[in-house]
Length: 159
Image 1: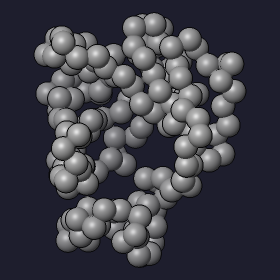
Image 2: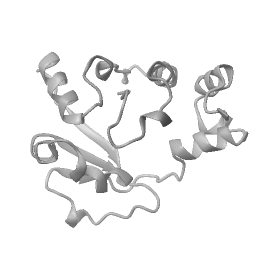
Image 3: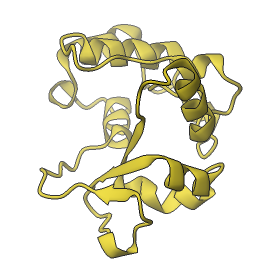
Image 4: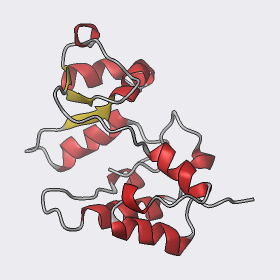
């Protein structure tokens, strides 16, 4: 799911939504189990997860929707629009992240912490910052995504 504008982030720091969608499509093109989605491009901005889920339920009522997020996101959940509805109506799965320890007993019911999985200390923020600094990030990204970023000059110094 590519979100045009997360209300908790500065929209001036976001790359154009079409570039982000193109990179997702390149990253998953050989995985038939995944599909890029631009549904939020057609919803009011900023993008609120609850509104997206309502739209997905309307368009695909036969499906069950599960939110997957990193542990670094859990602390922001109470700031999300209709947070209580999200937690009560949708399953949420949290993937561990380095430096974001979570006590499963303190998570709201319905939020599940994935355990016994590899935790990799690489983030999108780190990768973007490294590219801007001129570092070679070829091995942090799928090859076609890295080539797209280089070809388009994305994340470079804009000054």
